[in-house]
Amino acid sequence: MDHQNWNQSQDQGRPGPGSWGPAYEKQVMKETRRCFSRTGFVFLAFLAVSYVSQTAVMTVMAATGLSDRLGYDLSMLMTIFSMYPVAVPLTALLMKWVPGRGEVGRERWGFGKLCGFFVVCMGVLYVGNLIGTILMVVVGGITGEFIANDMQELIMSMKPWTTMVSAVIVAPIMEELVFRKFLLDRIAGFGHWTAMAVSGMVFGIVHGNFYQFFYAFGLGMIFAYIYLHTGKIAYTIGFHMLINFWGSMLPLGLLKIMETHLVLGSVLTIGNMMVMIGFVICGVVLLIVCWKDLYFLPARDGLSAGKRAAAVWCNVGMILFMICGMILFAGSL
Image 1 (cartoon, rainbow, N blue to C red):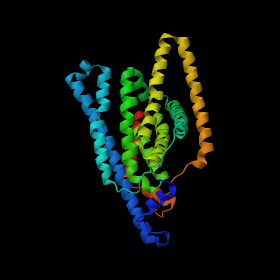
Image 2: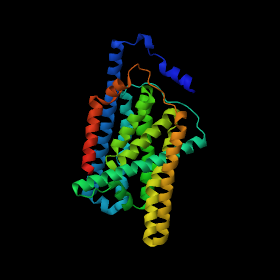
Image 3: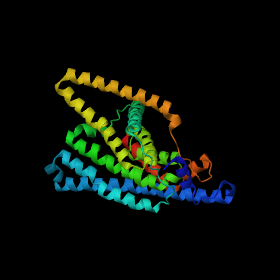
Image 4: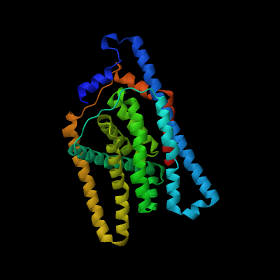
């Protein structure tokens, strides 16, 4: 679907600019607020179900001694995966409660364009990770306590096959369904910037810590852009898998090499750092050069950006979700 036809499809059933007035604006504000309040409640339920299911599994395994019989890695897999059979289908079901508007695009992207977006994603990953790390170092300096990166420690504590299954294969599939497909299929018509911001923010908050928030937010917005234009969740799942592999399996492999071959490990680590810097530089350059070619479908509701933002974020569901997120972030410090 080209941009012109796509625009026309979003306008169907909407009044023209000449009919916009105070009554219409009030109605649209109310509809938008209701839509995103329900969205907030859906992801609040996602957090609650995920926490309860994982806590329940950990408690049962500890009480029955099953965790000792299974071993650390299998126990961790069972704990991590316990949320998916309940939380993911529940999210898909509850998102139908959210009033849908618009539809995602069906653009065909070539291999070169996808590679360009991957480079930008990797740049965002490293910059976001650096911001989170610096912030935690500053906070740790102020409080006088070292703030551990719990996710990094978890990955380092697991065997490579466990990390591969959980972080590289299963998590990207489940997370892209929840934070891209289920969500964006309902809110695409509110405009690309709104849809991208909500997808990125929700994705970042659910990670529950400052180490991951910044790159998760940035990647969430880029993944949302890709899905909004192509409608192919396989693209974002593939990107997510590659990025998680680079961010988990690669450091784990380098650590193992360092333990047995210090010189080789040091050389490879320095090489990896150079690659990181290359991704950041190339990602920034690509984003600047290609920015004019990016297309963001605007909302067709007649609201100003400020009023739309107020309706999207200032509602009961979203406020409660963000309060819950702040509690998670505070607990991670």
